[in-house]
Amino acid sequence: MHHHSRRAAARLAALATLVAACQGAGTATSGSANPLAQRIDSIAAARLATGQVAGFSIGVMKGNDTVVMKGYGSADLELEVPTPDGAIYEIGSVTKQFTAAAIMQLRDAGKLSLDDDLSKHLPDYPMQGRKVSIRRLLDHTSGIKGYTEMAVFGQMMTRDLPKDSLVAAFSREKFEFEPGALEVYNNSAYFLAGLIIEKLSGMSYADYVKKNLFEKAGMPSSAYCSEKNVMKKKVKGYDYGPDSALHHKGFLVHTWPYAAGSLCASVRDLVAWNRALHNGQVLSPASYTEMITPGVLNDGTKLRYGTGLALRNVGGHRLIEHGGGINGFLSASHYYPDDSLTVVVLINTAGPMAPDGFAVDVAMSILGRGEPKTETYSGDLNALAGEYVGVSRGQTMRAKVTIEGGKPVVRAGADRNVVMSGPEPKPVTLVYLGGGTWADDETHYVFTMAGANASELRIDASYGYSILTRAK
Image (cartoon, rainbow, N blue to C red):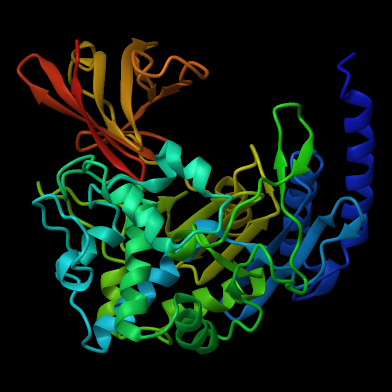
């Protein structure tokens, strides 16, 4: 027997007790008799029973009706404290839409243009002969080196140093690609956006967001996170380890996530934020439209990311969302504009449980999931097979395409010729959506043909757009 099995069984029993204790917590439109709330409780109980998380909170609002707003599982495993109503979590990269909204507000106030070059507002930043607009910071197309992908950041993240020391570290690095050539998710860009907010507003980022976003949207529990200060109702964060056990989260100084990921909030506050942002209470109509308009690469390729928000279609429903991951916490904030549905899932454990899939399952339990419309591919499938190499987030990506069972199968991941560690990439089988686009769930794949064979493979994962060229 696995030596962790008895401990795991005890933990699952404790978690099951906490599920039962939490079933009556929070708010639902018709109490326990509400079938939607019961369905969500059921989804939550199944997630909790895996033992992969300490706890989580779910906020769901359809139109003007609150479906669920409650906590499940544990806020503190050692003290056996159930997740309270109004629990506060670190929301990681969900922060980015607040940063983008702050930039848009400054644009509305006439203090900047999205087409301004970064050097106009941060003249000391070494541009290495390139021009990077503020827009390219916000849609991850700047090409600036991401600091979370740098080895030196692992040494800095536990130290309380001036913000300038991090900027000095990543600004020395070469650009990963020409601005506008690709979309590679980038925390450095949002760090710089935070500095621009502070410079043009004359306020700290924390104060600006509190006054101009939290207060405007009705988010009384939200704040800039702190590794030092006591915050009432803030749950403890955990990491799910390779030993299939929960551990205290790794230490992180909140100087560093900053405008890319340092905000704290409850599900109730994030539901309020979604309603305020998408219903015209935060930005001018023009700025809101721009925020949810897809970015565009230099070659005219339209992305599935706006400014601080991913733009997707899930189960036949249009979705505007962003997720987050930070030491001990995972988050998903989803808004379905055509269905007037908001779903927020905040988890106090960093591990294998994906908040995005969790939030989608909750939404589809309410909306129903349509099947993607597929077409028959009339071209030569063998022309797609081969190996492709290109730039990904902080690494070289290699994708191997094979034809199996009459369908393309892609194995994509870090180039194992460069990084000889980690598991082999998992195979994903593609379906043809038409118009040259293939898909695996939410990721789109487009092959560019040149002569008899495909010359490049474009991978659009919404949060990133990579262009890989045929290697062999």
